[in-house]
Length: 154
Image 1 (cartoon, rainbow, N blue to C red):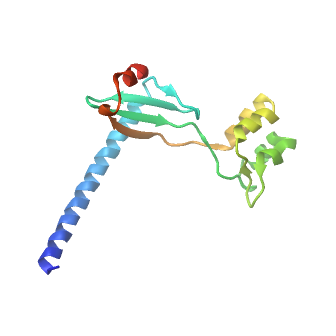
Image 2: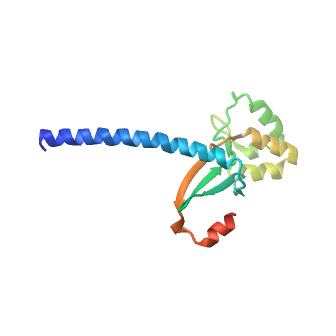
Image 3: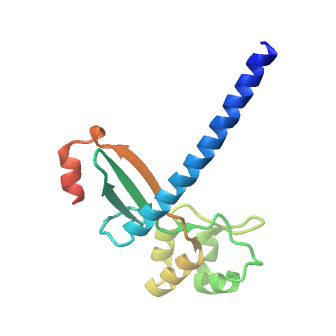
């Protein structure tokens, strides 16, 4: 490859990189605006306890998803909430957490906690073991969906 060709490729790459960065900033701002708008709209509850809101464009849609809280990957004995978690779980602690260098919630932790503890303790324990998840925004073209899709979302 010639020096001139390499120079042209570098120039084009830098130009594209700058354009992509500018467009990414604009897309991020639009997504933030859509998240703000979606907070005031009705949506559909998700299986995970979150909320999905569809916002229609002219020929596309935006789906804003506010996920339900996810479980923390692990809980360390040094975490500030560990004493509360230990107290709430009580005698069933070993059935709800797997020991390691930290305590990891077992698969189906939420359901197990609800079965093993009274309703109030289970709810408080689950909340202590969850972390909030940020909302996401995705886009889809309307060609992908039939009219039934939009009728169901309204």
